[in-house]
Length: 150
Image (cartoon, rainbow, N blue to C red):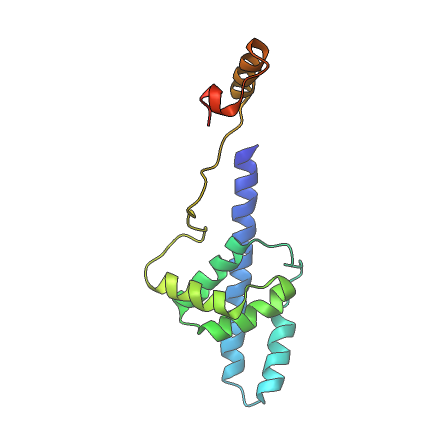
């Protein structure tokens, strides 16, 4: 089941990257044409508009697009402009696009968030729940301080 979900996500991401690659080639073709900038932007938006709405995409997917386009040499402002066409209100901010472009050009390869300092995540398992219930059944006046699980 997990493998199927991962495979579906990978296929979706590959389709997405292929469509961005097509958009990139369309933008290059448009930049060599003799039309005005407004005409080129309108035509590019019409050609690059994807069939499925991308308003439900993850940040990691958007960072993958930033990584792909920045390695091709696209400027952060252009990346953000293109992403706004596709993602609309769900698009990362221009500042975030600049930040992730800088990270990728400096050698970062992961699109995931780095771990943040703070309280560690605790895992609640059925064994832990059973152990706590047993302690409480033995002594109903037990506190967190006296139990040693602080």
